[in-house]
Each structure stands twice: as C-alpha cells, then as structure tokens.
Length: 113
Image (tube, rainbow, N blue to C red; front, side, top):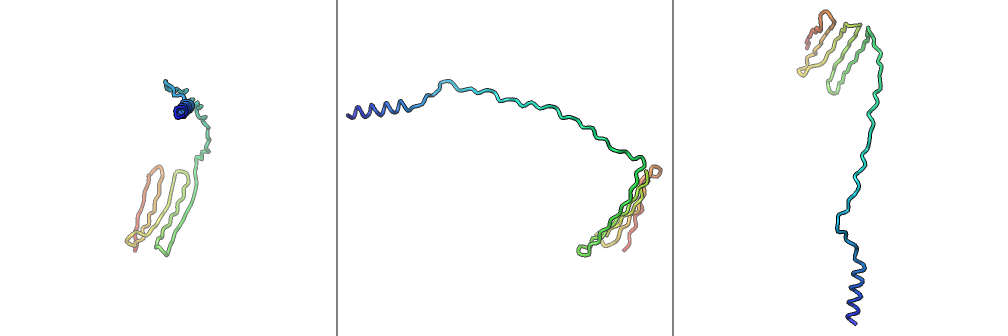
C-alpha cells in the first residue's frame, strides 16, 4: 500500500512539473518610432522706422521705506529719462540720462540728503 501511495505522489509530481526550456527565449527587437522634422513657421513682425513711447512709474512704500520712480520717453533714436531711488545710506539718488546716435549714452547723477 505504501508503494502505491509513493507511486501516486511521484506521478502527481511529474505530471505537475512544468516544461523547462533548454535554450533561452529570444524576443523581437523593439519597434523604432519614426518622427518627422518640425515644420518651420514664418513669423512676420511689424517694423516701426520711428519708434515712440513714453512711460513712468513710481513706488513709495512707507512700511519698508522703499521709494523709487522712473520716467522715460523715446522719439526715434533719441531716448531721454530719469530715475530716482533711496540709497542704503538714506540719500536720494537721481539719474538723468539721454541717449542718441550722435552723443551716445550720457548720464548725470545727483545725490541729495
């Protein structure tokens, strides 16, 4: 009886064992993605032969003590402007500047307590 039992267990073990391949399994190479070149988009920008603008801004923060301002205007190739700020030592620095084709960039700096 024990022999039948061992034989039955051996048969079940052999039957449930899986097939082990001798040679390694090879897979197909991955597919290579093909991308087309990006299409160039032409942008046209308007050209202003005589640019003009004028702007200004100012900040005065009582909490932090920050105070600064700037004014600038352009008419063609001539730029004029002024900016001021409070330096770390408490003095107010004011810079007045001009820029053109003939004289280049020129700035005049003044400091006042």
